[in-house]
Image (cartoon, rainbow, N blue to C red; front, side):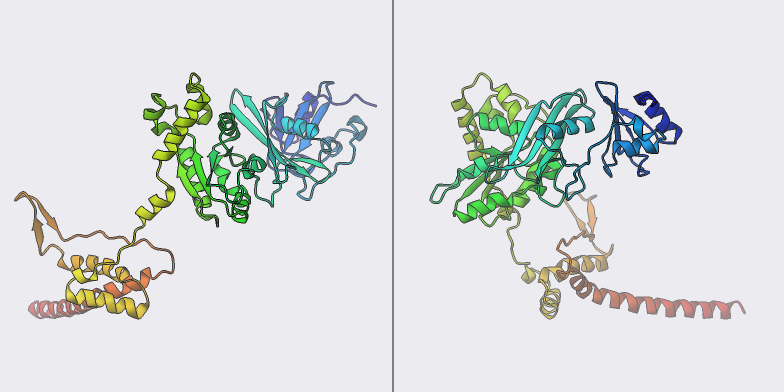
Length: 435
């Protein structure tokens, strides 16, 4: 029996077969030769005893199959126990610790995570656990999910992500209780900081870009069932992704059946309350507590209360932004007003769909024939109007445009015809002149 191959021999064999090998931390990445993969789906590392360890993240190819595909004899590889697979094709690890070790291996990290965040079900049972490592390249997170028979590295691909601290949050929602204020931070670290000063806080899973993928409906269902009133305060990070995170959550929360009151509190905007100077870019609630470390918990809670009180509800902002007023058809010339009214009635659309286009069409007919003299005698403006109609697809924008421009197109067609006749006459007269 030959000695087991070293990691150098394995990497050399991969490269000799045309597979590119790249190093990532303490792990090497390559395409898996067992199933002829194309991406860097195979992780290779060296165990404490010098044995080569491999994990195929794409097809779950066994270590034996990988070694055999590289031309090493099967008795040279470590005998593997049958691997149990989940319904999603992922390896089921019998214990949480083994799943953590596998996640660390996949991340190219050879130590335990710096933080473990547990996302429990409503009944308190395990659902998903997020592992976090702080590295020189920034934080790395990996989810581990509870499934039948153990744990998988990753998530259940057919389900929404759970929300953080759900069982603790819903305890505040009881029939007859006054509006319950819930804070939504961006990330578990900021959420735990908010909890540390007594706030009922939660967050979505796996980064700000996945805010809408979390199962926020569970919170809405509890609030609806107990006829509770929610006040949701979003505390985003102080950067553009943070604002996008908050806006995506507003879109989710405003669709709740329980009709919560939603506010976005930007911590950087309240220096007059906190007494702080410039708030750091990307700063969150954790950073706020660090900067207010000389303040008592009572002081901090009073500051947060003042911030929320000064913030306008998103419902009020939306109401102000979309306040509707009927299009003032009566201010248009009688003929254009009649065109708007009758066309809108015939096509079952709003008069503005015709009017906004008709105004631009009439201005284009004026052309440069007339100009408006403004304050100074050398300042003239031609009749050029830029108009824009924004509405959902199928709401009648095109029929309105057709009604407004049909008279103009008729005039243009008539002018084109007259121009063609004059051109023909000119050519005939020119020909007779040259005889």
